[in-house]
Amino acid sequence: MELHYDYIIVGAGCAGLGIAVRFSLDPFFKNKKILILEPEDKNKNNRTWSFWSREEKFYHGWAIKSWPKVIIKDDQQTIETEAHPHNYYTIRGIDYYSKCKEQIVTSKNITWKKELVSEVKNLAGFNHCICESGNEYLGQHIFDSRFPEKLKLDNSNFLWQHFKGWVIRSTSESFDEETALLMDFSIDQKNETRFFYVLPFSKKEALIEIAIFSEEVLSSKDFDKLIKAYIQENYPNLTFEIIEEEYNKIPMTDHVFSQPDSKYHYYIGGASGSVKSSSGYAFTRIQKQCEKIVHNCKEGKDIILESKDFAPGKYELLDATLLNVIVNERVSGKEIFMRLFAKNKASTIFDFLDEKSSIFQELKIMLSLPWIPFIKSFTEEIRKRLN
Image 1 (cartoon, helix red, strand yellow):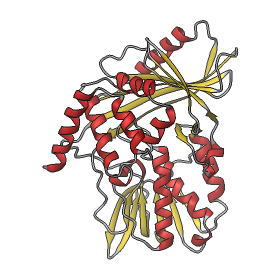
Image 2 (image 1 turned 90 degrees about the horizontal axis):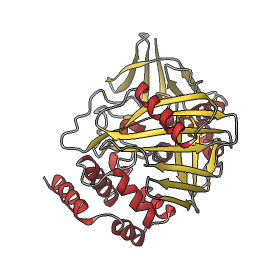
Image 3 (image 1 turned 135 degrees about the vertical axis):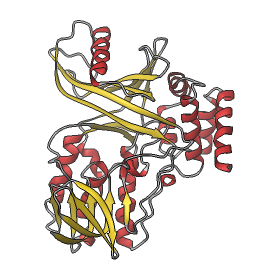
Image 4 (image 1 turned 90 degrees about the vertical axis):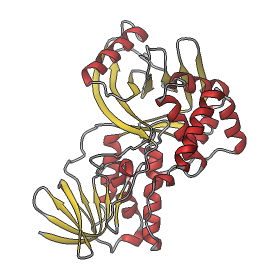
């Protein structure tokens, strides 16, 4: 079977659906043939996305909760701060999938097929999506969210951010639903960067999750032990049930992600380097990429997706420097983030991480951190770029 489309989206995840829903919302694309190839039904809540924002976007209304205040703490101090003018948001995967699908089905020109793409080939000027079923679909433009099988990291900095969380429902009112516990470093760091976060959806329901930055990935069962111990320590005698679980990993790296050799075939989302190397946040970056892709398609401009698009110029270098410091254990992640929030407003840090900070804000950020280890890592990163 061979069918031809103007645009084919491989994978209905954050990036794939983000592009598809924008195609659906924009009348310009109503006469374009668009295909989504996804092996799953996307009817389960398999993850959450959290992000901060000071701007109002159409997907903000899909959030299960937003918080005006955040807490960062360790075993020595607790920092409670207003996020204003930002809010901190969490969108459940199932809500994102459902809202996108509700919009997409209103567009008769968008087709969803339950297919697993095994290969994309350019033959005679057309990109062929070859599926495990044996079906082939031809597309002028292919937006591909499949992660490359192997990353040639060379001398890039690299850590896994791996995490597991439980959404729990307690029998008593146990959570402050107006405040998100963004980072709790009070646990044993094990010479890594480890922190819990607690995102209360109501007084009785919350996501309790642990994230680890390290080279090796912890098993799901080992994560369960840590979560159980944390709840017993911080919420003693709490009676609760586990409603949902999520377990995943994402790469934190300053590796420059390459695009496919085939013309009009593009990697998107995490496969294109959307994950911020210094923090692991990706949702807002992916949404910006989706906006750019759809805008360029509409304007007939070249679609060039590069890692540097996410952190242009100085931000890419600063991200790499911070990751270098953590990878080489010059300063712990715990000390870095505790110093940042102790000496800066949350809004300043959020602007910096969003690559929207002023020179004054950047100076404050840099003065918050220990100079010698950061200068050493900064120098190493400069040398890499000169070689």
